[in-house]
Length: 128
Image (tube, rainbow, N blue to C red):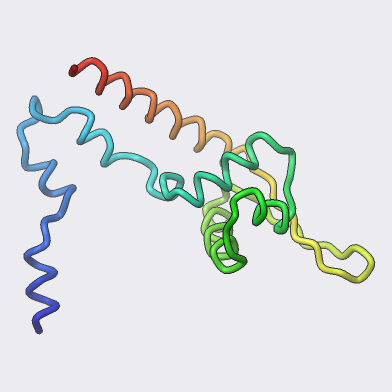
């Protein structure tokens, strides 16, 4: 019961931003529109690593990002489910090999995300 009332008292950032006057909104309200799938640090790192490499194996990604097997599995699955990356499973000398590559959809999503971040940076610089 206490958890439910605490949850109701927690301010919702999107509702708060929407309640402000349009002229009071700035970079803060634009930030709420970020692609939340890509904005998460580990998923952004995965997509960024794949953007500069044709493909990477699970082991290579894990080493580059310095994350655990579990973290890589969970975050790569979310990106795969969204169609941003493609996962290929093969065998080399009877040893399983998982490789990832960025899809065209994923590259476009990254480009949109980066353009959005650049506009936020410019808006912030313009306010100073």
